[in-house]
Amino acid sequence: MAKYRSWALLLVVALAMIGCSSKESNDVEVFTWWASGSEKSGLDALVKVFDEQHPSLNFVNGSVLGGAGSNARDVLASRMAAHNPPDTFQVHAGMELADYIKAGQVQDLAAMYTENGWRDVFPARLLELLTVDGKIYSVPSNVHRANVVWANTDVLTRAGVDPKHQPANLDEWFGDLDRIKATGVTPLAMGKDWTQVHLLETVLLARLGPAAYTALFDKREGWDSPQVSGAIGDFARLLTYTNADSQFLDWSDALQQVIDGKAAYNVMGDWADAAFRDQGKKFDVDYTAFPVPGSQGSFDFLADSFTLPVGSKHETAAKAWLTTVASAEGQRAFNTAKGSIPARTEMDAGDYPKYQQIAHESYTNDVIVPSLAHGAATSVRWLADITTAVREFGTTHDVDKLRTTLVAGATKNGP
Image (cartoon, rainbow, N blue to C red):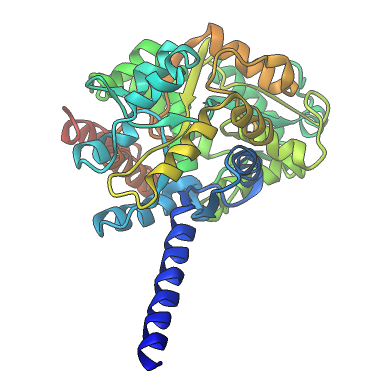
């Protein structure tokens, strides 16, 4: 009898272990920095589609809050170094993946592209940015535009600035900023760290144009040019119009100043559109948007995408997540909520709010350039060096030091 009970106990334990193993194998940990605001709304919408498409799988939210990804990247780097990767993680399309690829930490997904027909629905320029030595290491969920100015129409009107007029260049914009400053309202709301790198990249694009801007990163040329020095001077001047607490605010807090009418402008990616809409604001009524003056005709590009890490514990479930990310249903739900546009080319722009229709037209017709602050243009290490230089400039205001540090960084991180 005791022997029977022992065998029965072993059977119960074995069945329990099988049950646990089965439950665990149905999990998929998705690591992102979409933990608040419109980003979380987009993730929630995407998860809903995932649950509908794969009802037997269990989404595990591995999001890390803060810094538009900088905090998450720090956590991810630690986990990857410890050989404890999530099942899939968010990354920006382009050079941000370079270090992971070099370290052999992410898997080639080219076969999935062929099997699922994704090469036929993603634009050629996007596929080019995703491809490294003939391999593709991530699946894009969207496309964002970085070179956008967001404005509170009421603040502009009260300052005597026509909300419907888009300044032709930075010099013209400086005039509008001066008029707003005279009213006592903050002309340009600004946050810390990456948000200032974001502003710098758009100023470089505005002053250099798309070809010379792109050459800064793919050829490492021009960092010591008079044009870059001039752009750095423009960047320094723009910071004189910003809020005194800029070194302490995240992007969403800075944008909120514009939404609340405490500031006139904010330079931010077009995820800002969802933040306005989530608070009941109407485009071209309560707020408006236009390309950073001087950057018209350029689409400063970034795309959120997902990987399959080497060592993923639930690889089959992770691949299921990737198919949802790439699906028309997933992209429609995600981008409508987040404020971006689909990476897929066959989606109907008319399904989206007015600003996103404008962004879609620009993406279709304008020159596409890679974003610096959001990983499309540089490796993680080079971006970290640039961010450190810009952060120090916020304290020292030493234009010459910023210029020489940026030149040194380009040399250090060259091919």
